[in-house]
Image 1 (tube, rainbow, N blue to C red):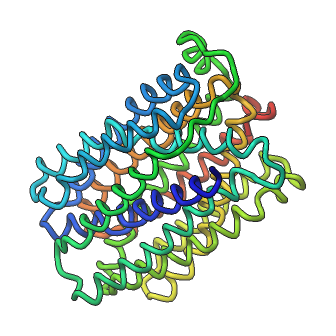
Image 2: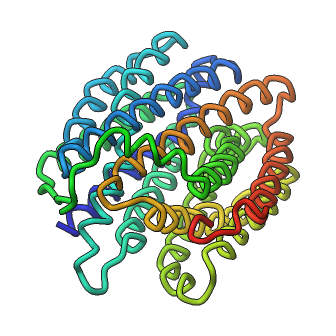
Length: 384
């Protein structure tokens, strides 16, 4: 079971590496403006937020998130089959919205399955299973960048959407053979899920994580565009993203040890402060060496942040509501956070004609998350 989960993470995040790294440059190559890129990705994330909540509730009612995961990946594959043939904003938007009806739930369902699967196994942990996803991201972030560069960095190169489709198909097939992992808990009632949003500590956690993820949108959406605008090759995008994920893997490996030595709140603060520094420096970076080396701070921006977020959710959400809790996190942090960040990034890019200034605003947003983290409202453990 653990081996299959590792491969699932590897294939899923290989697809994420393809999409996050090269989708926006691909759309730019099709002639999309920054606002159009922001709009189609905003629509995707807005739908994904609601879908995550729905499928999370279904999974908890079934008592085995992997069953819902199989259905979600199949629906996502059906929708993504149209991506290589979508060439206009309307066509791309339709494909992304249809896929979002299912894709928004994949991560919370996968994470819920993994948390339950590793719990009874000595020496296993969520973060050390999840790091296989980081390895998959490295492979495609670097490999596809080299492939696109070797093909002459063609505008709108269909190697990008076909590569993404391949990985979606691969992990969809794997999802169909994952064994059911029961939660061994009483089935929840819907009102219990709604009551989660009345937990003050959980709301603070969702707020700071949502701000952090919104501030990461210029990187997730436009890092490849920033590299192109600096007159550099797609290989630089791949090298930077690959180095960042290597740092992320190292952070996930040491996270269990760090958690034994430091408070969860301290680790969150390190993640937000380090990310603020990263964005501030990236806003002024112009050379390949700078753009690549700064991605080492991804160890804090995602590795430590994600370890903290999963740990905080485990402490704050009852086991029988684990899939629903992860779905709420995914909907509000990834769904709403991405939607807001992507929309603002797209419009900001059109206004400044450069992605650089967006990172200065992102740095300020990270400092806001850091301030909220230390307010008296959030002093109670285990929320932060």
